[in-house]
Amino acid sequence: MPQNQPRTPVRESAAEVGVPVPTVGVGVLTVEGLRKSYAGREVVAGVSFSLARGECYGLLGPNGAGKTTALRCCLGLTTPDAGDIRMVGEPVPQRAREARMKVGVVPQFDNLDPDFTVAENLRVFGRYFGLADAETRRRIPHLLDFAGLAGKEEARLQTLSGGMKRRLTLARALVNDPDLLLLDEPTTGLDPQARHLIWERLKQLLQQGKTILLTTHFMDEAERLCHRLAILDEGHIVAQGAPRELIANRIEPQVIEVYGEDAPGWAQTAAPAYAQRVEISGETAFCYVDDGQVIPLLAQLADLPQLRTLHRPANLEDVFLKLTGRELRD
Amino acid sequence: MINSLFEPPRLSLRAIAVWRRNFLVWRKLAIPSVLGNLADPMIYLFGLGYGLGSLLPQVGGVSYIVFLASGTVCASTMNAASFEALYSAFSRMHVQKTWEAILNAPVALDDVLAGEWLWAAAKSTLSGLAILIVITALGFVASPLALWAIPVIFLTGLTFAAMGLIVTALAPSYDFFMYYFTLLMTPMTLLSGVFFPLEQLPPAFQGLAAALPLAHSVRLVRPLLMGEWPAQALTHIAALLAIGLVAYWIALVLTRRRLLK
Image 1 (cartoon, each protein chain N blue to C red):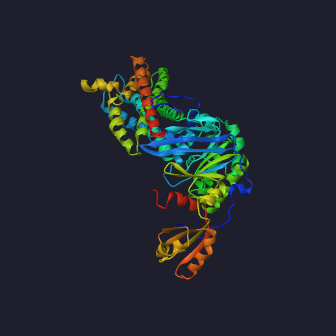
Image 2 (tube, rainbow over the protein chains, first blue to last red):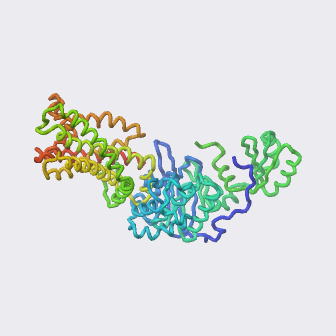
């Protein structure tokens, strides 16, 4: 649990950096009652959500929650057992190919063409959309500029860093000027600099009116980018709403983390008198408290110097862990 | 969308984009690729043709090296098509995830497979053609009738590419291909009249051997290179075509089952 570091309490969500909150209207992507089973196990068990134009919507969930399967259903790569999907105005899977004309995808694992240069990757991908080479050539400088890869047209793929490849994948997903972007864990494996650059670009795309469906494990990523999100667990949506709303409604507002050998014992005996809820994970106790309980609890802890404490506001990760539990899912 | 794994192929022009992708990769390595595909069969042709051939009387009415040259054209085409449809297609499907990227664009799996099929056939045609040119230059080809061998080479490529795609659709890893080469391709090369006339086989085997796809190809190409029209040409063409089409359909069903879950 990477909880030893204090978190910045104030976050910039997409809405606060000037991306207009989208108006609910025509859904760019609407999923209703989606179900899909593999070998008798229901991986997606009745999922519904809808994305308005210009919205960034997040699908969060532990491994195996059904995020990738839901994306595959949206793309028409697998036929759902039940449910209705409409993507960019087309019914899926019936007209999935037509729908994909206006969709860009950043897959979870890099699948750029290793035999090609940067420009060839884009040109060849443009052909899959029926774009003439001349048209793609015209778009390439702009796409590379956007991806921070200006002047890299002739670079061989092996010479690119992980972050550059990820940005090229994003540029490739934009080659057809899509209305909707499906991003499957777009910043997994990137360093902080590379992640921040991707986030900036995604915010720009939202400002241009593109719609984004994002799956991620990173709560800070979801909190920054998503107007709304759904938390999936075992194929079900267990919570849905704006990140701020979920934090306000689904969890106590304050968290006091207590570390030390004696923390679990203290958490079991003394802590419940001061906190709404206490969770123990190894040698850390997480005390979820109301605003009024902060001062009494901290005062109590001041008498126990062997315990280290960290006080912070509740965040999306707390909501996520409350709803999906702390057990490993692999 | 496909309604059933078993429905017939749905073709669209997007298959050409897949074909062109593979062509662009090949173009970067064209010269080593052609030379590589030429070297191995030519070594066998000269080694066996001159070495073994000097011990032999005429075979099938011509010197052994001329007899072997026409078989080599067919066997090389088969090998080139098989390698492309097995190792290269498997890399793109399973290792590099190239197909996955393509399927996120408005290209259907049927288009991807059709593109791969036509590409493997085209690449193997280049291999067969390269050998045809070399043996023509060496004077082993009797007449311009040999030009008719070119469409036969392409058809041979189509048939073996389709068969290879079945194996690729089933393969868990590259190691799996060893079975196909050892148990099918090698016996087929030896039993299809490439190295010796089928008539040398025990009578019980002759019927079986004559039904092998490579045998049909040899029965067409060898007479054409010797300046004669093949006997029962339509039967052999129909057999290659039928094997190729059925194999392609099986490959398509298996690939859909593997990737569209």
